Image 1: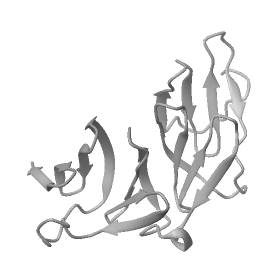
Image 2 (image 1 turned 30 degrees about the vertical axis):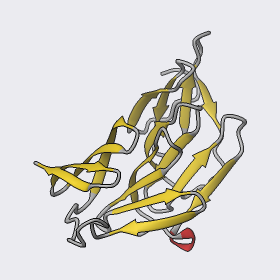
Image 3 (image 1 turned 60 degrees about the vertical axis):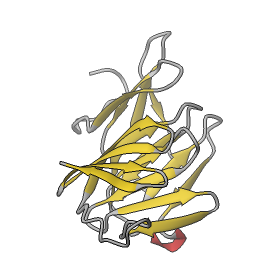
Image 4 (image 1 turned 45 degrees about the vertical axis):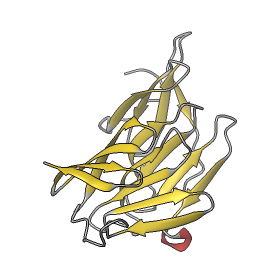
Length: 172
């Protein structure tokens, strides 16, 4: 194993906008820069916090879903902020986070559904704002941004397409 790796499983693999490769283990994020040589990147979290999933936006901001402690957003300069239920998350057990092209933060939880933050407020979406119908997403586990304001969301109740101004436009 490369230096810095633990014996924990690799939970996620991603490429950031600078083409660095990232591996996420339960308690650490490890980066392989283009120049080579894996390096552990310190995250300002307590020893009992476990990491769950990783994503990057186009500006290089890292979003780390935490197993039971909310979400961590790390800026390219190394500064970070942690969001929990105190800041409006639907739960502290977060499956996935995504900063979209417009800067909105999408958060998928383990059963409380979906939250979206368009700075500065965080809003839980349990109902389609266009129709008032329950979204019925269940546990949201994955996001794929198709374009500005256009997302696919994978959840325990299927695959959903969300379009800005229209709400849920497809269910599979």
